[in-house]
Image 1 (cartoon, one colour):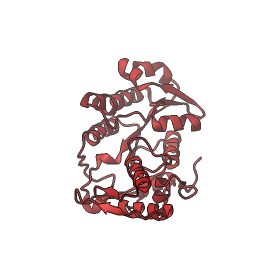
Image 2 (cartoon, helix red, strand yellow):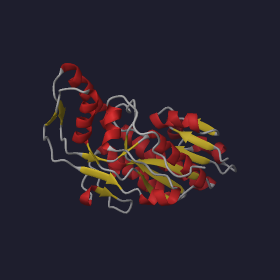
Image 3 (cartoon, helix red, strand yellow):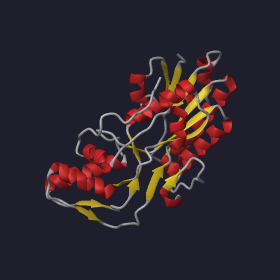
Image 4 (cartoon, one colour):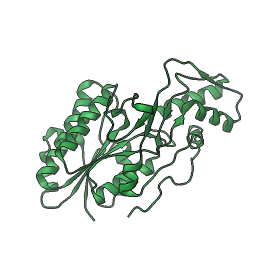
Length: 282
C-alpha cells in the first residue's frame, strides 16, 4: 500500500487518521514551514508517496491563517509536483460563503467567502488545484459526539445543556439557519479513498441534506423531555449552505446522511444513526 505522509497529525482529523492509516509518516506543519518544504524531499523521492494535509487554522490572527491555510498547502503542492506524488488537501465549505443561489454549493460555483478563514482556505485550495496532482476535499460542517471544539455544533450543544440545566429557553441567533452536516467517519473514509485512488480535482464532502438548526434543537429538547423552548433572536436573516454530493459519490461511491434527528441526538450526547458511509471502501 502507498505510504502516507501526514501533515497535521496533532489536529482533530489528524489524530483520527493515525488510528486508521497503517502506513503513515507524521510530519509537523511547523517543520514543513520552517524548512520551506525541504523536509519532505527524502520522504517523497522515488517512493511515489501520498501527502495528506489536514493542518489548518480556523481561528487566530492573519499571520497564523496565512501560514497554515495558504503557505503550507502551497509548499506541499510544490513538493508533490517535484517528486511525482499526490496531495490530498482538506478544504472547507466556508470557501463558498453563504450566498450561493438557493444555498446550493457546487464545485463549479463561484466561491464568495465572507470570513478571513474562508478567504484563506480558498487561496490555499486555489494554489493546490493550480499545481495539479491533487485531490481537494471540501468538508462541510462536522457532526460528532463529542463535538469538535469551537465548532457550531459545540456552541449549540453547550447552549442546550446550560438552558436545560437552568430551565431557560435556548437562544439561537438565527433559528432558520440551514447547514449540511457530515460525520468524522465519512470524512476519514473519504480521505483514505482519495489517498489510494488519487482522483484529481475538487470534491464536496457533504451529505446534500439541509438541516434547519432550530428544528434540530427542538428535537433535542423533546429527547431530553424538557419544558424549555427555542427562542429565535432573529439576529440576522437565516442563510442556507447545502453541498452538492454528486461528484464525490460518482468518484468514490461513498455517501453520507445526517438528518435533523441525527443532529439532535448528537446535541444530547447520543449517537446518531449507525453508519453514514455507504458503498465500498477498499
